[in-house]
Length: 254
Image (tube, rainbow, N blue to C red; front, side, top):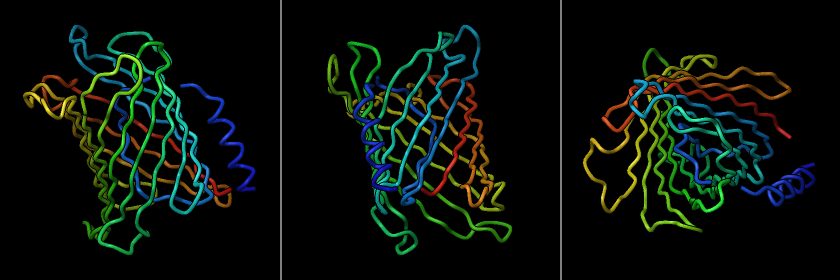
């Protein structure tokens, strides 16, 4: 069955064409679950003054991923989005790879490496590469519960038609308290720097932080459902006042 599913995935990937996507508010784990299928939806909507040019930016992604080996997860993602107060349009198709570099729990931290290629759905727009390390560590927390800390540190580069030579950087940090499988409260931080060699003033960059909570509900033996919900406050004038973001995921061994 694994061989058949791998062939199906390969066929789908070969048949899909794909736009540089906007930053996705998504903290990725380095852990790969071998033989598991994941169906995931991420969404976000910005909130600001109507005439600010930052209000009602939207991003909606749907991803299908599969743990091809014990250390490699392959995914394909479709993104729809819109700039401030604009109509939604299909933006990108993305091939994603997560490589788990260390066995879970055997070292000081669990490490992985993320790599994706995003192809523009609009002719003439550049495509993008995004890649970088992922780290995760569980520590003692509060109220007798452990805490899980995750960091994504990614570089971004345009390729293809009309690309520029700039190297961008974005980060996502999350710490959550593992209180209960259904409710894990935490805090997260996201940021973007468009040009690493000329980052400009901090006030011109986009940085956000805010509370979140997550959880999972078992449907054994039919997998489980996971969710996240968060609100991000803008830190700089270049960032919207607030952003609501959410994630829904269904996982099932195959």
